[in-house]
Length: 391
Image 1: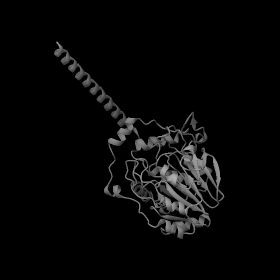
Image 2: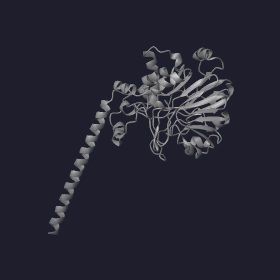
Image 3: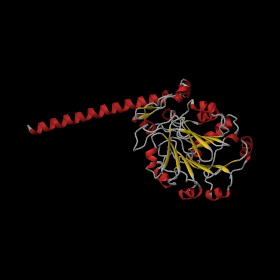
Image 4: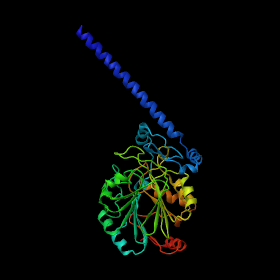
């Protein structure tokens, strides 16, 4: 009797396990088909229509709902866990050997070249980290000089070490666009000068103070801050999002920034998808000299289109800004999307050729490259930097 009962229970258990397995498999299959349908349903034309349907006045609207920030002109679609699985494990994009191996050059002796160079300049340290000197005022954007951005490892080294940067650039102004780990790196921030002035979006003050900093200026979209060298920094919208292990999704704001100096205006785009903000900024600030726009992590498009621009969108944003020069950022360092890290530069070069664009207006820098900014008028600066060889 006992043997029959145990056998019956074992059979029932196996049946239950089989049913659970089949139901789970069906749910996973249905979810994957749903994700696949979402990916196939995306089109560039449809996305452009969505952007065009947004209202420009919403760029000035309230951007916080309780404890969370949001983009009032177009809410970010919710990403489901299975969307991430679908992206990471199914249908990866294929790239040629050239695309897989292309990297920016690493120009050596950066610190020595900075010391020898007497004028104003823009220097690409790597990823979205740029060192800018204008009238002996130093600006550093989204500093990350460590080997990893949480998990992704660097494919190329930074142009400067922390020690070199601390020795060269003082006093220092730091711009933080948002809290993602490839833009706000704790180890780098903790070793930069304690009294550096840090300009950051709303919600990040305490986080940055905890990174061994004493001067943090929190800014909301459209806020202005006056800094050294008779410069004005304006915090502007961007179409992105925020999250860290210690901070919930969208608990802190994200932003782009406009730096106005007596002679030059620079736009730092941070991370952003394509949106009507570029058009509005170009109208409101009609004298932008350099536009630093992200060119990274835009594949697969069905997954990335809201938060990252592809090359045609980045060029369109540049044109709408009315800027003189385009500096592509965030390529060549961290592998964050489907595309290898060097692909954005190759695609930008191809897009320039295929559309007969003025290549002099596109400054695709190498790591450690110094791009001079002349102290003359903007018209003279345009002619001068357009013909200047790489330093």
